Length: 432
Image (cartoon, rainbow, N blue to C red; front, side, top):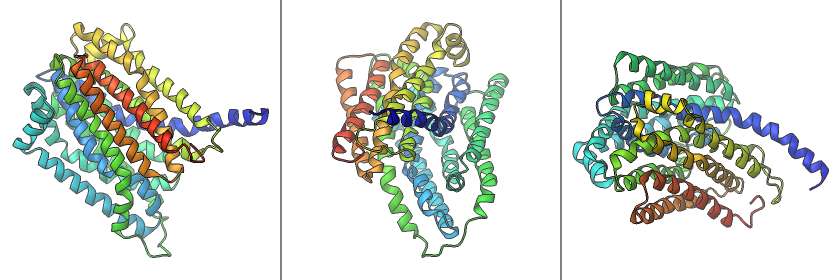
């Protein structure tokens, strides 16, 4: 490497940070809403079993919502004109209705029991809150789809800071409601869902208001606008990979349910994961960094280096909550964990340190696949991700590994395997 190229990379780092940090903060703040409402759920009858049930139903909600995962990217392509935006908004609403309908079917008692008890293997004490919260979150699911068009309008106008204002408003209200409900005694799974739903409704309204100036600037299309069918067909492949990956939470939960002491280990695992997930989700924004700063050649590893550094930083941040005093405040007092189980939570949190790092390098690999215009490879990588979850869970279950460590190992190995496969398939590409 020449001296000039070294200076160039040094100049790129601040640009990466300026681009990545707002995206990471927005992603983390969205994911943090679930740990916030967990204190409301765990303080109701059933304690931390409610938390495990909420976590399992949240995994189902997320899995269903990924059927619209590709809508943001699709909107940034098709919703740049007045007609394009109107048709894109219609597609978002249609997909939202379809997803809400599927979730409603899963709430039918016979179907719900088969899904949570027979398929996933949840014990009755966790199955009940899981089924209840899945039913109560149907309006929440639809609200997420109503939000997408307005957020996309601001993204297309490069007003990402404005878009994040609506998200931050949602987080503040969630924090306030969680504290208010906990103090007032409005606790349990239903009140936890209320804590999630009301702030999202406000976020949708705020997004619609903030997007108005940008929507009025949309001009009529000078060419035939896209058909709704075209928007569906563009979005669908982008959603498949995310849908495959979203199944991992349910599958891991099923394996832990079949390991020793599921009523102890499941709440412990999801408590630790609840703090690690927002930071791991932030790591996925590395993909956008790759799009914004594409490698100049095969030997340009600057985005990979940044992914490793950002992922390592994000992996260390949750460890703040295992420090003496803070661990007792958060896990025992706020989340109602039995102090006897605190060492098990700390063990899980330490193991999860590597999780955001693995997500970051996987996201960087997916960015390379996008640059190569080979999104199908992302789907293959996510299929490998899911396969490794199944293989790891099966092997560790037979070895009688503790459920919490089984879950962590499955997450780490699946992310690493996915990015390795992607890089092998892209080895002849200019940017791989």
